Image 1: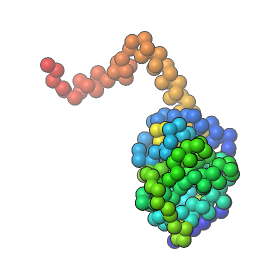
Image 2: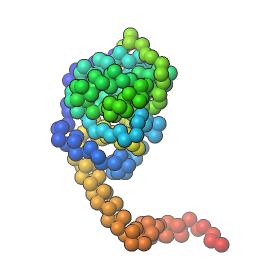
Image 3: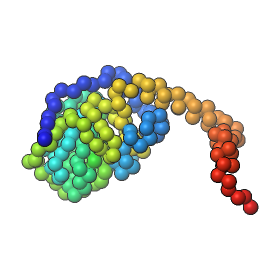
Image 4: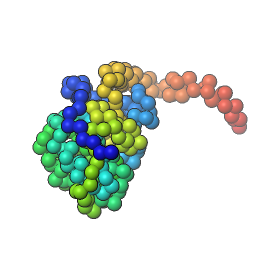
Length: 224
């Protein structure tokens, strides 16, 4: 069944903006490390990419980007397109021209579980794109799909209206209903890490700070 929802509920823009610059490693730690974090195979197509926005979800037919183009017309400034392209890597479903269009309309990025192309041009635009792979091959624009329905991207479940955060290390998805708590937890963890760094710079071992000796002894490892 194919479905296109033209309207979604979005979290407050100022709340989404608070996630910009928070490392995905921290967000992954304070959420479920695996359920909310996309596979390591979903990577930025250029160094230095960074994004935070509201998910507009897309489900495409393998090798076809018709629904991705339609989704661009439905997205609003601050949105991030999240595309389940069936992990299909033999066609670049995303490239320079559609990235330019998104940038002109204020979108904050694209995440595609599939392939992109025109990597150098996308980097010049500085439009954040995350993809499973790269392929120079073109795509069809003829098959059905869905927009703003629950999808899977990089092994993570994504609902329309979720908050999507990406940096050089990957992409994390945050349930909008949990966003305020996740933000609070992330800031607390950043402060804890800052405090820990001071102790490390004073010569303390992480091993001792985390009391790992107790765990080590329980393993009954023979020292020689």
